[in-house]
Length: 349
Image (cartoon, rainbow, N blue to C red; front, side, top):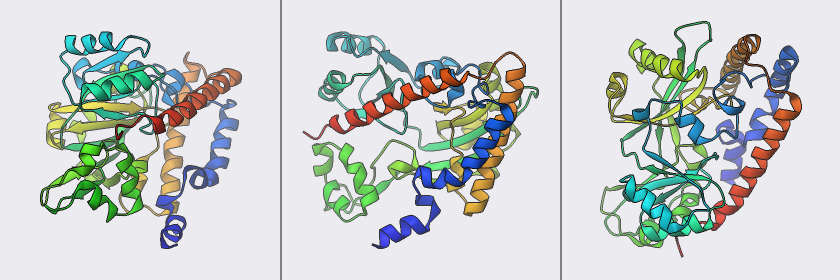
């Protein structure tokens, strides 16, 4: 009962629709103002639907400098497992590595693959184009929200925050499964992705074990404000990256050795970048009240609207109503199918 009360009394734990419902009228105003249901659809011209939803990982990575993201292979699920294994060998990818859908979100069907048996099972079950990607082991994961008006040479970093994945600590006697049983339900939800071997492993005293590799709050990740570390060096780096890709609005998800190394352009990897559909997750970091959180979201939407309106007037037109609706319905249908399959693909059996 206490957990239910906490969930509804603390806005940080509200589900998506109850949280965003009061902002529905603001979103409607932007539709009226732009005379387009898809007023955001020209904000990032090089991404399908401006990266609001349904874009492929491939089109995203193709816009980035080659050495700025993990080594990635694009896999057709129809190829044989033998062809897949030969492809992986020819590109010198070694276990463990990551697999995830080429079109996906919210960590659905994201898996760490530790061996051939897991890879073969995933490949047999998956019904969508997916990617095989090297596992990035830099210790720090951050989110960086970037906005630039197309008329300006330099943009602004509106948020910088670290992501801390859900962790447990060993006591030298208990298995991971036993430690999980002592923790709350939010953490044990992640145990569904662990293998039998992992669950039965005794965790050495004081050793940390990450329950999830997915850096979003729905998987237990917490966010911590780093805005005081934003400076001109960091901005200049992302101005350069964003200029080359015509990326004007959205959030970069990055792993790096340190913030200083990132500012030098060394020892970092861009895991993904999210466009018009990016949630300003930094509202969950720092000391935001609900009122301030809504104000921050509206400020970002105002920039999104301005950028998109400018691009619309300069040749990158808003999507037509039925084109956008058809595309969005297809993306939603694809996501529902992936969620069903996500429950089926596990490595505990």
